Length: 292
Length: 197
Image (tube, rainbow over all chains, first blue to last red; front, side):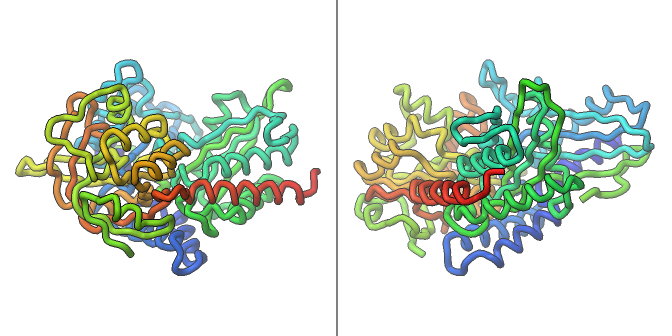
């Protein structure tokens, strides 16, 4: 599967070096909107320069090339074992080429073997579908933004959040407040209401596969997404937590069923260096097209 | 814009205040989780590293060897600083550090140490690894590469016009504390005024 290997290395390279167009547009918009002459504006200008430079030099946007998360939509019959082996090899080679930092540490010994491969690294999510297309999406999620993610169990007394949409709103806004600039804002939230703890976090991250400019098909969630962005931007946390008008570039919410006893709201935070790309592959493993 | 050149004097540091935008030139040493914990537990700095009047950069760069075998920094933005909050005050005190570059700000112990010993926290733009790598002109040396691995090693870097913002000054002010208080008050006001449905 020589061609698949090359395609996956190219997916990693491009994901690491470029923000997708929808994200770039949102950043450009926030730069125009920010008050001139402020440190918030300076920060966004540096961000804008960085996006340009990384793309031109084909080098990582951010040195924290993050957790490597593959989302594979596969036709029935795909050999997932071979695919996973090829993906791991692609990660190793991309690391050697400097597209990824040596970023994976043995949690017991603290050793970093420099390959970015080990238990749980990279992470592959396979979803079978009836279409013959093989689509591979990749998210590189840095540790700074991952560390400010939060999971709430409702009711939550500290925020006064009950088990309803208003309670969800309160805890999501609390996550934004607690994150301040630590997750490299302006940020993007992926949220899952419901699920067990693991599913909630997992689904919250799948929201990062959505385009920033899409509209949630569930009207209540679409309204909540918009309101979270607006209210967060009114809090004045700003880019990098410097103060300013842009705290969030987007918020994406999904619901999962829950058991009656549990009501989790899981919030994942993505930094402005929002690394997400995807490819459609032909039967030989060559790239047919880009998804974002 | 204020130009700062290492080594920093106490006076230069005391002249800075929250909100100042600076350009840093000279030598900075990277140090993150492993280095901070090691120094906190009484570990000695490797021979050749002197932090007195110096700047610690919370950063785990991507560094590769070029064709000639020389180190080349290809990405070098700041990492989240709060993880060093348990240790930073002591390292400022024991090693006469005058500047800490990072992102996300630090807490009250670092804030107090900046005031007491004359140090500033310099906020770089998180994620801006390419703009900041361009400011790194040369890798002078690397220490603890084997011991801690590449991102956690001490990389001694020569930088030129490295942009940052003073967000904790040597007078006891912290932009992070101020923005948190203001945003917390704004959120409380919003929640109080929103209908509880």
